Amino acid sequence: MDPTRQVPPDSQRIAFDLHLPNETQWQPDAVEGVLYDTLPYQIRMLTNSGSSLFTPGRVLRVLPETDFDVLYDDTGELYAQRSLRVRDFYTVDSRVMRVDDPAFQVLTEQVLNPPVDRQPLSSASVTADTDPEYLTACLQLPDTVHASVRNTAFEIVNGARNPYEAVLRIESFFQTGFAYSLVVPDVPSDTDFVAWFLESRVGYCTYYATATAVLARAVGIPARYVEGFAMPAGGQPQEDGTFEYLVTGRQAHAWCEIYLNGVGWVAVDATPGYDYALPTPTPTPTATVTPRPRPTTQPSDPTPTLPPPVTADDDTSLARRVFFLLVFVGVGAALFSFAGIWYKKRVQWYKVSSVRLRAGGDAAVLPYYWRAVTGLLAKIGYQSETSDTSFGYLDRVAASDRFPQEGGLDHQLRWLADRHVAAVYGEEIPLSDDLSRAQGILATVLRLYVKKRGRFRYYLVDLPFGRLWPRRTSPPSRHST
Image 1 (tube, rainbow, N blue to C red):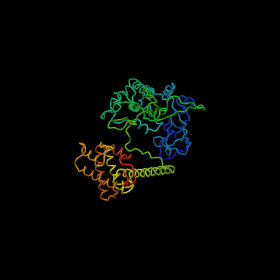
Image 2: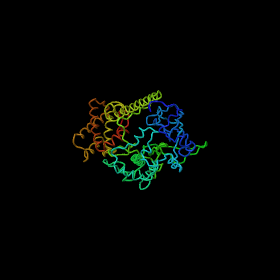
Image 3: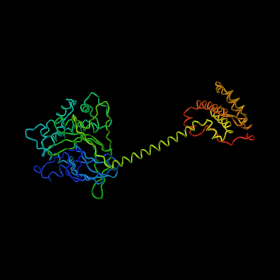
Image 4: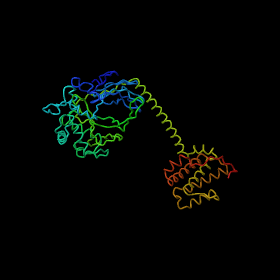
């Protein structure tokens, strides 16, 4: 099929690999309701999704109820011309095989009508009423499949009268002695996956679907690996007599489909003890061999599947997303710049330019530095007493065994105390050099504070919340104490 060609919504050509008994074999009413049911399904999207259309069974017709066209590719997959959105819905008329009906096996065996001489299963299952090239691809196996896998397959189906009975034996084989588990050991890198699985006998749906397809192909039955959703039994009854099912990722499942001549593709689920409420994990690609989506040898020159064409609706949606992304980036950059400027000012709080604004003028800068220095010293254990003068306080601090004696910090602090007293009681206006020297003294004491308290507390607690600098006060006068 041409993957770029649009299928009209009311077309009957969306019958992918559908081969049912013709009227010369069975009357339609003898098959309808036994081999299959023809049912309408309405699918409504509850979340945004990709373009794939989920359809049960073999599709006869698709009626999109919203503004998208239905396309298909060369594998028979249906998809919308755009991504699906919340509240999109479409109706599908499908033929669903009644594989759980007891009469299905009986009628299927009659349809297959095996010859008296018991032809090989491959001859009995592959005939000219379907695409021989595709069925041949569904019989291929990788060269890495171990001989023990082929031997096991023939042992299982030995004595089967037709392909369907053979597949039922394969399904039954996995129902006994195998266990379902989401926790499985890694497959050794030098080991065939199916051979290893037949020995370990534990895995989840991906393992069983892959092994079923490989065993079926090994005995000449066309088979393919399928991934989709397994609807749990029972649904919510509606007033019009229909049933509603909620299908989520928790119902993700994998199974196998085998092709029967005159019947079509029939689902075979060999997973034992599968709980439809459990999620199915997707194996992460590693250096080990993992279950393959389709256990076949891929053609050397595969035909690429073209993506759905881009529409004006897609362009508008993309432009809208780009616009909001640019707005988000712009706002984020502005906030980051604002935060950077704010934080930089906080980091540089001890510099003269910042202190001058915070103190309220040059006359108050040196007293501010003095209060900042004594405040930091108090936070690291050098508290003042109410009876202390400025120089008396420094005498006690310098006499402490913990106070650093190197670098002349004691001398620098005494100079700052002298300038502080001169500014407060002598109303002296400090010179520019005095302000720069006072800034250096505060920077030295600040380094001592950070060393004692730790960088974490300084940068994440004290600095952001302004716990280091004194409150702003009025410029000192001769009457200030």
